Image (cartoon, rainbow, N blue to C red):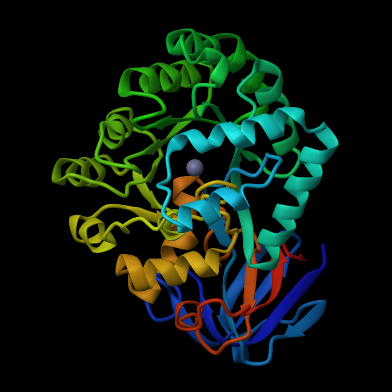
Length: 389
Ligand SMILES: [Zn+2]
């Protein structure tokens, strides 16, 4: 196996408190990383670096772990820019807009869906995302959900069955019948292609009993649970996720004090999705409340054609800092190690011996520039599993 020495790193973020300055970010200066195959095998001072088969000098730039985007919806077809324009002209966002994408997705061929997914995956990688999760949820039939997941599983191991995204129009008069479909034949067809099961627990989508039924059925079929909750208002979703011991609960825009306590006690990761508040012109949650209570926090894009059509983790970091009151260090941790934790992964989201060699070289002297220079394409190059991406 050939080795690669990445050196000339002006500032290295390892997310390994055992490394560098001992902070959560594990910051080091004038650092180097040795990669063998897909793995990091050595991290330390450039002056003390061992020899390697090849040397790559990054010229004093900052290097951070690849971003881990733990929440996206990329298997879809169609365009909803008109809906966005209408919303920015004063029409409020509701969960029902999902049905527009459902119609376009059902009508698309497998090849069209795969090509659209590949385009978005490339877009993410160019912006430094080296691990991403993505969901079904725009098919809402047994056939369309299963094919969405089969297509997604070609590009990421982090696939999520979201048959319980919204009740499709043909079940509008029989939501209980739709939950039976999701927990029965649809789950059976989807489970072989999915790692996770998810539901949209929200007024206008699924209530707590329905979400619980979907999650319990999925967990019974060998999947792990995660949940969309508390996006449009306070509700039972966050506490349901904590009670079930789910790895993550996503959105968390409207939280009661009891919700925050439940998150802190359960260890369920609260995944904040600032692109949604940005794109729906909604109030942002205050991340300080979560940090002060001792909650685990992740930041993800929720990239989807309706409520957050950005694939940019750097933008989400900038929004988390500016609008959710995270420090730049907290936001970067939430977008890397936090995302990894939200996916139950310890091999990504850090740069340490044994971790996957996912490195992002920034055209900047410091990671702080991710928030300090919003909208600027700072990703100079990406190593994904030790390979230039
Ligand atoms: Zn979502």
